[in-house]
Length: 155
Image (tube, rainbow, N blue to C red; front, side, top):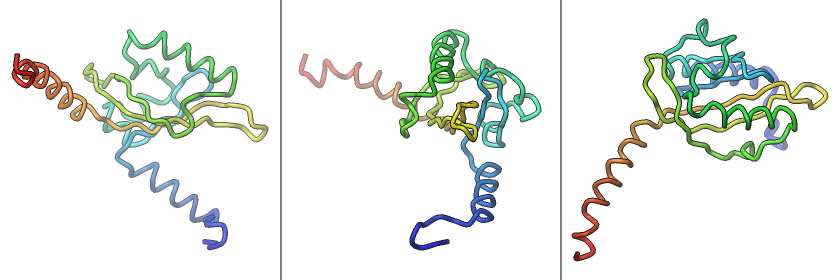
């Protein structure tokens, strides 16, 4: 690595990228402009329960709950048309998702736009983490707090 720029040589970058894509526990999913899945790493298979052969080529509807689809596609289409997203600056988003067995899970994710050599948007990639257990724990704690609130407030 060049200590002045902290940029890794291309071979190191490629090796690092490959290792992360193949071994990270998080789901990494890439899509084309139409929202078809073009990349599905082993983390995505573990989280969602679909292997790459089942997912690649499919619409993102595969993992989007039906009641969330209209809103998702409205935003997705806007990003593809304009090349701009209010969520690409490292914002962490939280949404419900679907697993292969029909369970609803909760995921947090960040997105990056994929661009061609001229800067045009060719698709999107997301890094997703299953936070279902934490989300469910928070719901239980909120219910417990709400049930105790009259006692806490002396009512």
